[in-house]
Length: 249
Image (cartoon, rainbow, N blue to C red):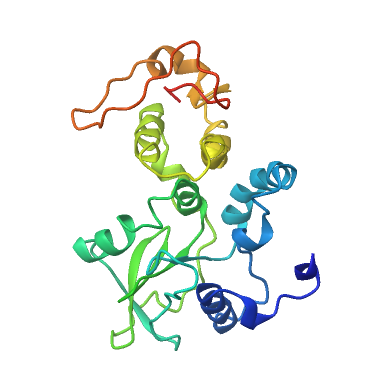
């Protein structure tokens, strides 16, 4: 309740302090951090606020991703915060290991947030990357600025239209999403619902049914376990645990 009026800067975890500093350096007044704005222990608050997350990320000016730590108290934005030029990056092992395979990227909610965001600043322990609809750029204080460096930031969504252009794309996306980690099993469908809302406007989609689409329901019900899949616990018809979405969604 005390945070409604004021949040003392010194009371924030170190990573949050770093994000506040970056936001100020970028010249913006407003910052939204889900861990501060959504009370996960309050089910009613979560049910009210969780559906808004997709619109928050898709409409935000920039998303800041802190990949350098697993703990909010460590702080991870170690690169210089001074203005620097950017250069177009040919994606290689560095970006893959520090961003695509990071602990943060493997989180279920982050999967949707990255796809819906207009642009992202990725902070790792050793580098800073800027990602927008035109690609990924490495921030390098010593680089010669390319001619488009001083152009205004683009306002179109990052990759929703490019990632999910066909039904096959949707199922590839679901396959990638299913290996992501979620703290609460109840989040499995909500954490991808924002992408589903975009896809629902496409002709190939129609009605959304627990991770499947009515127009291709016969295809969506087909599945096979990967050869390297670990053995999982299978729930029988007498399962009496918390409600779960169907295993195929």
